[in-house]
Length: 233
Length: 233
Image (cartoon, rainbow over all chains, first blue to last red; front, side, top):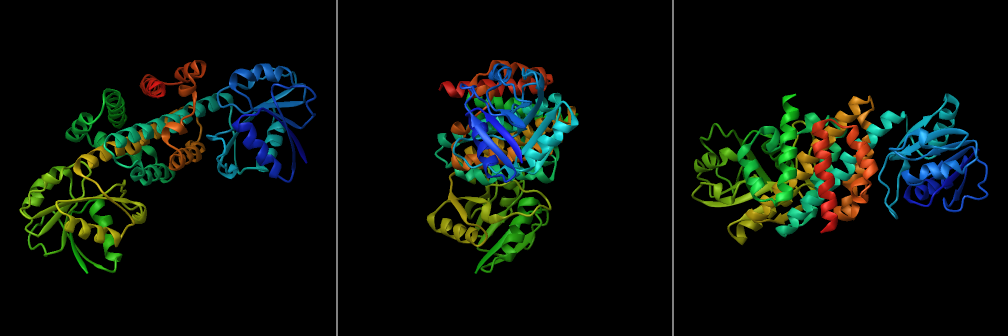
C-alpha cells in the first residue's frame, strides 16, 4: 500500500485524487492548500498548485517526500527540507470532463533511483505511460505542449471565426482536425505536411489571403513562410 | 444505378474510385487526365485533377454533367458546355493510407436542385456527411482547412523540433494532440483555451521564449498576442 497526500483543489488535484481513489494499492487523502495544518504523513506528498505557489506551499510541508505536478517549474522550486521530486501528468485537464489516465504520460523526476521507483509504482496504479524526464527536458516538453495544445486550439478558433463569417458549420472541419491529429501517430509531422505552402502554390496563397482579416493574414503569412523555410533546411 | 467517370490519377481520384467500386449502386470507371479520348458517357463525370488543370481538362469533356473536387476553385472554372457542379470531399488524403469516407464531409454545389439530388445520391453510396455549400462558403472552408490541417501540422512539427533538441520522445505529446482535437467536438475552441497566453502568465511566457530559436519565438509571440487579443474582443 502506498499512502499519498494531494495538496490543492484545482483540476489536476481533483482528477489525480479521483484516479487514486479508484486504485487498489493506494490510500489517498486530499488537502486544501490554504489550510496547511495537520497534514497526514504519507509516502508521497503531491503539491498540485499553481507554479507561483509551489515555493510557499512546499516550504510548509514537513513530510518525507514531496513532489510537484508542474511542467515548467524546476525540481528546485520545492522548498521542503526533505526529499523532492516531480510528478507531471502531461495533459490538458478540463473541469467536469472525464480523464483517461491510461492515455496520459507521467513525466517523473526524482533526486535518487529509489524515489523514482516509488513514483513509478504510484503512477502505475493509475496509468501506463511513464517516463523519466529531467527538468530541462520537462521544460522543453512544456513549451512544445503549448504549441500542440494552446496554439493549435487557437488555429481551431481562427478557423471557427472564418466559418462563422461565411455561415458555414465548423463541424464540417472536425473530421479533418481528427485526421490531422491521428496522422502524426504514423508518420512524422514533416512528412505529413501538404497544402499550398509546401507546394509553393502562390495563386492559392494569394486567394486565401484575400479572404482573411489583417490578424488572420499575419498568422497565415508567418506560418506559410515557416513551412517553406523548414522545407529548405 | 448511377454511372460515374472519374478523371485523374492523384490521391483524391484514387480514393474516390476505390470507394465507388465498393458501392452497390454505382458503376465507376477511371480515366487518366492525359488520355482524354473515348471518355465513356456517365451520369456524373468527376474531374479530380489539380486546380490549375480544371479549366483545360473540363473544356475537353462533352459529358452531360461535370463536377470538380477542388476546395478552392469556383464552379465557374469548369469549361464544359454542359451542366456543372462541385463534389468536394473535405479531408487530407495520404497515398497508401486507408480512408473512411463515412467520416468525410462532402461539400456539394450544383446549378440546379435536380443535380444536387443526383450528387447527394452518389455521395450517400460512399459517405454519410453531406452538405450543400456554395462557392464562397467552400472557399472559406478551404482556407479554414489550411489553419486546422497544414498550419496545425506545422505546429506539431515545431513541437517535434523542440523535443529533438532536448532528446525527448515526441510520442509523449501524442495523447495531448489527440485530446486537443477531441475537445473541440464538445466545447468551442474559444472556451477550450487554456495556458500561459490566456492567463497572461508573463513569467512562463518569458521562460518559454528563452528556450526557443528565433523562428519559433516569432510564432510563439504572434500566436500568444493573437490569443490575448481574441480574449479582449
